[in-house]
Length: 187
Length: 155
Image 1 (cartoon, rainbow over the protein chains, first blue to last red):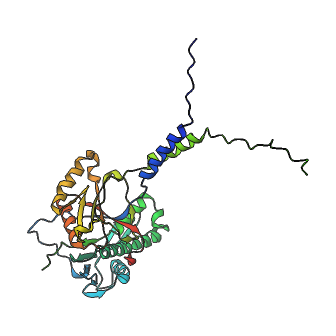
Image 2: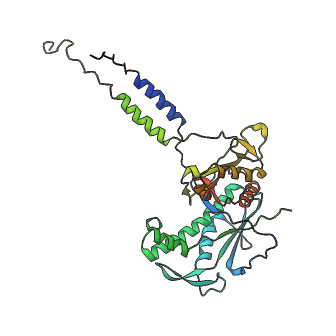
Image 3: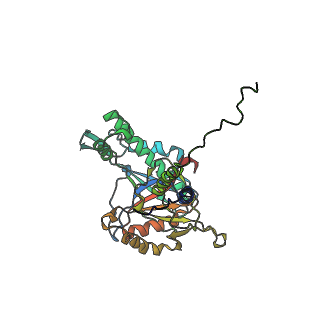
């Protein structure tokens, strides 16, 4: 007959488990990072002629070192930037001062008018990062609202309710055209 | 009255604690799975700006962070500095750092590597622009300006 093994006292198991629990509680960090995702343009070759873009197709946004905004040569404010950008990017075929439009065939949407407008963002080396993010955010908001309007018009759905194909079509119809100028040397 | 009182006979039965370890183990496993240990010690202050049009940073394993901000150590001044891994760096060091980060990843994952810029809100854009130029040179095009949730007009 096998010798009886004495039972191991398990009353301290809870204490050990608590110790481990405390350790993981302390070291855990469950913060999820959020942010504005952007794609940097590839580096430009030297001696390549700039692509000429018609003046009416560009909305120039400048931020100076005192965090003041200038839109198309006029002083502006961050509170109106979103509306300005939205108005600029909305296709207006019969407006001579608005960016040019061209018809484009997009799956699920049919033929729609697309603006050739580009928003050019330029900042000084002395601009504060907070201001830069605010401007980026307002521009992103303008594009997101245009997308939302487009989604509602064509699919009667909100942007976040679209399926994959629909979201792709909307993304194609309203491309986020924010171009950041090459940094200029400060004299 | 006293007639009806039972003298010290009725005791509350002991609550069994034998399932306590099991409950605690369950909690442990939860925290073990969700935990991600902080891998760097921050040497710069990074009070992030706020924004509304933000997306969640997916797949943390494919994200490498650059911290930019004024040093925590007041002796080092208030000028914003770059921190890569655990130490201060200059913009020239970024190219090497990106290559190192790429080496550490699976080959299939390398094109999806994102660089998160965690920048103090009062930093001047000059240093951020330098970093962005370096990232462009070395081909790390996917970037993320890490921000907090909140109205951008409050920045």
